[in-house]
Image (cartoon, rainbow, N blue to C red; front, side):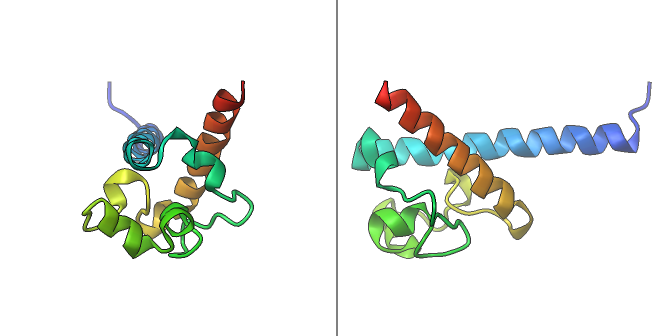
Length: 109
């Protein structure tokens, strides 16, 4: 049976969210290793802005996006959930905040 355009779009959206989650997980693992697991408490969620080099995760932890990348010797942060294509930045922002809250809650228990 052939898949409809709506089903294809829905599957693509699920795949994109899953990929984004994998990328965020990879970034969190790097930060856990370098900063310790409590780095999540050093992020100001109210000012977090994944479109800003100073207010994104690397900006808040390392003083700038580029400084954070150089800490890990990365060319860019796409594969680690530190940035994304423009069309996915809002999803990255929302998923990052959700993950930060989940981690904070887990560690506060």
